[in-house]
Length: 181
Image 1: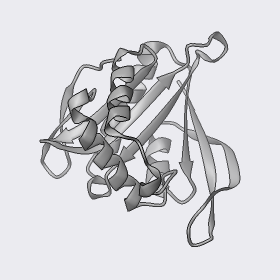
Image 2: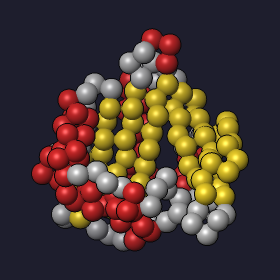
Image 3: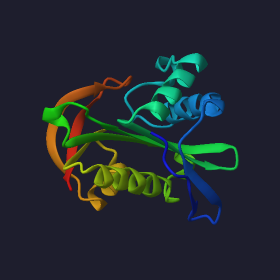
Image 4: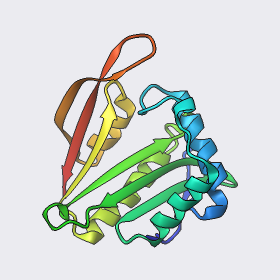
């Protein structure tokens, strides 16, 4: 699904653009993802575990652009990708009322409004689609993300103890939230 681009001003005064990525941005998206995985323990993997090739990323971008059930967005300032987000709508009759969202923002852009802008766009798409419930998952301790989700009306519906084991041997819960639209 291709989403109409929109301009925004970040809290630091920079102009940014929310748009659907194209194949020419595959390498930049991969760099952004690897950087995000290395900046925090609040994502599902370590950077070296992210082994998507440029060709696979191009295919993922093209599939998302042509799918009626997936919307992928990036936030860019100039040529730099600051964050990305995705919403997946279920095509199945029994789960068509639900959608799943994911979000990733470069640590250097935390607090600039990137996450809020991406999330706002995803929630608008869910409402336009007639979705009743939007779901997401996050890693325990990611209080910044949790506050963002709660701002949009999400509430915890499930906690999975010891869902993530960090390299230092500690565990973190996996937390699932839902928002009823």
